[in-house]
Image (cartoon, rainbow, N blue to C red):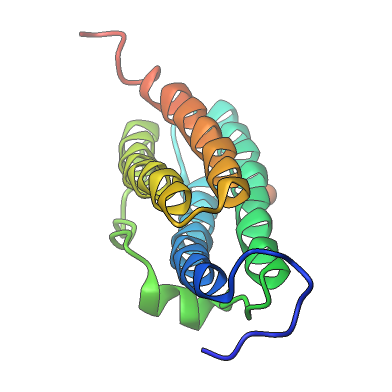
Length: 162
Ligand SMILES: [Fe+2]
């Protein structure tokens, strides 16, 4: 991978590996964003308005995660791989279930997607740290804190009967 020249003092070998890590999580983030919107549009039932609005709030944050991750790639001299086609080829998330409608089904499907995403991002904190890039580790920590919060918001809808 050819990097752009930069005065950033992180060694090129570090930057190369961190760029690959960030592009991998960028792919997951773009995929997740489309899944959250899919839920926002298609949810039905008596909790429609609450969930429709909740899913849009999640989408706004995931859009931030996309931007933070893509811009870190570019800061390090790389090329952000953020188109839908590139993202879908590289994403580690499962496809969002087709044909679901109820609030419970969408909350369940989205909580699974965010849980998978959160696990990958949490692992990326340690990976960035091991590569010697604490700033990227900090970005992933911020994202991970956010995705844990949204997982809680979603799961709170499912936990009242336990
Ligand atoms: Fe909308």
